[in-house]
Amino acid sequence: RQEFILLSDTLGLSALVNGLHDKTAIEEGTHTSLLGPFYREVAPNLPLGSQISKHVKPGTECVLYGRITDINDKPIANATVSVWQTGADGLYDVQEGPGAVDYRGVFASDANGAYYLRTVKPLGYSIPMDGPVGGMVRAQARHGMRPAHIHYLVAAPGYRELVTALYLRDDPHLADDVVFGSSGDLAVDIETGDPDCPIKGLPSIRFDLKLARESAVDKTTGRVGSDPSAILKPAPREGITTEAPAPAAS
Image: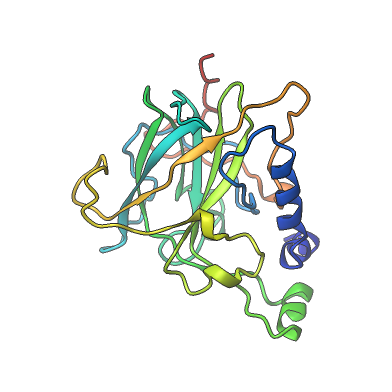
């Protein structure tokens, strides 16, 4: 565990760097959010519509879908869409035990820029409060909670890599995220009966993403606030490849 990175997050420095990174873009796409310590460089490649959770509790399953476009709403086909989140108990897979691979997957957008998958409703959670940073947060009379969210890393040739997250609008800590990562423009609702949802019969979350073009002089990444020691290689998931995704077609 990296207390220094956690300190940077809880002081708002990581979020500040994220904001400065956004301002260097040549055009404004979806705003970024913190990568966090639980990203894995390699995760299962899954077909569209797959369930990314191996543990689906009754009443928690939902559909996550949207479109990947440029800032002019032109669809971006074959974009690499990596998602990861907590389970319904507020834990990431790496917190459940060595070698666990769950609540994450890598998808490719279709010819219309669409992506869709099944998952479980994420739960907010507390940062570690048993170390120096937790002591500082308590001394400031702050809670240690992060609102429920789902992380994204989206990449396509010719576009800036996008690191962002969606946040559930009904989470009580949306407005006071302990690491200052949430924002209103990234907040979404869980809908029922959405006619546009590609998988029927389940609650759904729609999250569209706009990618900014990559400039010739700016090839920076938005991977802010990550702990490199937590980027692990996952154990193979039965029936699923863990090979890195093939580069998107030009």
